[in-house]
Image (cartoon, rainbow, N blue to C red):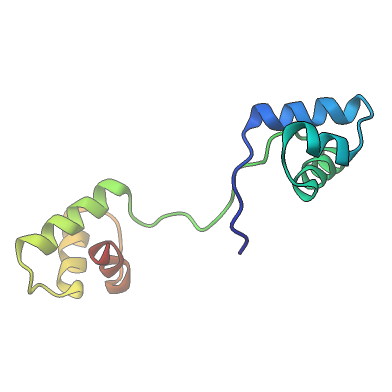
Length: 110
């Protein structure tokens, strides 16, 4: 996956505004001091979708909330020799969330 810096929304609006004023990609890149590829991608997105802002990214919904992750971490710290399966059973008893052993082990590793 690409390691990109996020272009803030005000800069995106400025790029689209300059594009509407018939500036070339090269001129816009020199004006805002960004790479031509970045400007081209933003302009292409605007022309294809009509959006200036990038949409929210989709992904798999989280099984546990941050609060539940903290609870899992507290249980693990309370007894360091407790297994992930035992913590999973304890979380299932106290909360209505059905979590697996591997789901429990992820917050403990952080």
